[in-house]
Length: 488
Image (cartoon, rainbow, N blue to C red; front, side):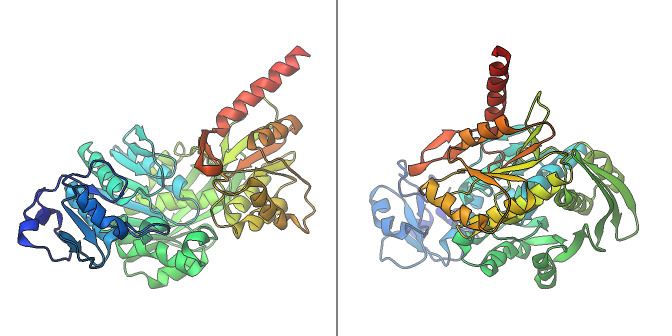
């Protein structure tokens, strides 16, 4: 592709001879090996600045370098923001696939995976071919693709959109993370619908403050036609006053454009009456428990209605749209107690999943949890407090320690257990902790294994990644325990 075409809609100046040069690709990682004839985009990160490698990349054969400051190099292209430029370059490289798709974005601290998954299933049920971009996996129609992060890096994101457009997708429903927005990974996109779920403490290691975290989330609504906003959340109410686009609201407590009422809860899910602002009503059934899943399913209903799906069709499809991988997922078998895994990894999410399970618990509610390393350390004692206040027994263990000492992480967690009366045990090895919980469980207990949810790995010291699927582990351990009992 000619550089001049690749630079369309990007404010910069470039010499005529360079503008007519053929570009063979786009790279932003200085460790890339095949760079001959490519365009290198200098990205400044927390630990490394690509500008320091610009000269070397030209020496290795790059056709040009995109910078945000003048370096005095031949073949440098200076732009205001290299992250935004990377997104727009990637879009141009893949033929602007975002313009061929109807985009739906969901942002917020909790609920994104459930809302995007349910929205996709309802649209699928209406006969649309859809794509999904999210935390658990990416999906083109029924094809499941591996993912590394909720919102892919810019080049991978537009490459994925191209594949979705080529596969005939009409809609793409995606989780849009605060980091993805702040790092301009989706720059240039226009969302037909953007939804806001809630904002609670998380990612302060990245954003520094809740105000910065909120402002990053708010960026989605500068590129959205219609916002769907949770007005039960104080940040949602603030967002409603600040955004420039059209907005519709949802609530499971107050009057809104989409209001849930007459709610009934059970261990297997929830039922409620959905009322729309024009007076129409529908009885909804959703097979995931807890008040927060009333909110999540109401959000999905509001998104689909905004996209034109009839209310009665939404109610029909909602009945089979639940059961999301790693979200309030029952994973026990052939035992008289229940084991549930959930991705809850913030104080608010821990509190919500445990309150949901508390309403269904006939026996004890046991919470097994840890906290990830190299992540917001301030939330560790708060997660412990939420677990202690909403369960009968806590098992404190490791999560993904990454480059931190697991014992140091657990020490931070234990600070939140001070003053609590809920008994607990510390078992650092997560597999051993799960086995201990299974061996201690009795009839009607619920064991909530929280923090990792859908993840099928654990990241240990030095970034070593091992296979660790809690569904597999629970099933293996239950088989082991059963075999031991049969031999007695």
